[in-house]
Image (cartoon, rainbow, N blue to C red; front, side):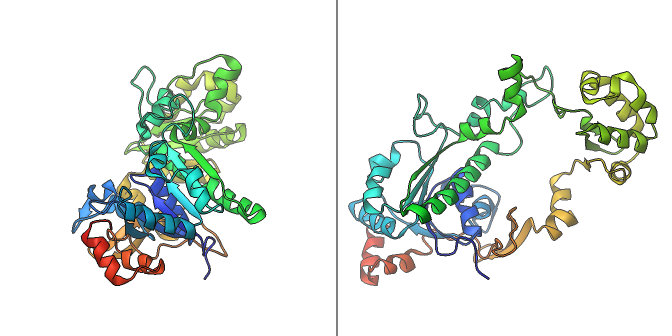
Length: 395
């Protein structure tokens, strides 16, 4: 079965998470993604735990379906090889600090002379221009400067980073979206372009209604725990054996919830009759819901509220997520694949499901330099020269 990005070649000159995640998404959709790595140690995350037989599961999770080629880009020969590869590529993906690619001799203006159709996608902490462009940026920096940490955590408590690397993941997704749009534009114009994605910008773009509170009302949003600022009850609650969440986004939802709880009288009380009043009186309403659920199990509550047509979920831990029939089995969000060194391993599935060109995870992450001979041979470099390049530690 064909894949959506079949025939697209991507040079993935990235490390850590944001860039590799972007390359992973493209590879899952069928692009030939060639991970360009330093001959000595490769991507730093090859050393990150947990490991199985020396193989990093972090690295395997975001570098599956890729090839690996090692090149010393500081050497003359390495630069010549990389230049040849650029001539054959559709996309160059990198997540270095701005200026690094220019110093290596492979900035956008330079590679555009080699291949005017190439799409040059850069992911960085602060972007390719602006006063902070040269600052190093990681996920926690993006969450802090983008405003997300200021509204994450509990009222009067310390600002908190989200438990997942939102800046990195959103940055990777935004870069993948930009690349696919640029591929479409190239079909129309015949020309490539430069894509500039910032982790900070990616966090800022996710603020949705949070930023509008200040822009239009002059209010600096505060931390609200699990409570959503735009509606109530939209929060986490306690049961006899754990926690769960309810998402009452409309007045109809609240009526259905009250009926399911056997507390229809709540809908007739002024302080709970609509969203603005429920938001104002959220503490009292939360106490009522917690009192109602204190002698009930999470599973019982979820079944009861689901039957009423109200969005609700248990708060699952990782064991429960990975063993969940809907997530892990039906939606295939955890997939077993074979690694040549580690054996059978489990990686996270792809969240994008397509009917005609489905994503798939066909192979584990490559060993360091696994595809050197194959890719160099494609460039017309014979085995004798490949051995010389290896001896000189250029590959």
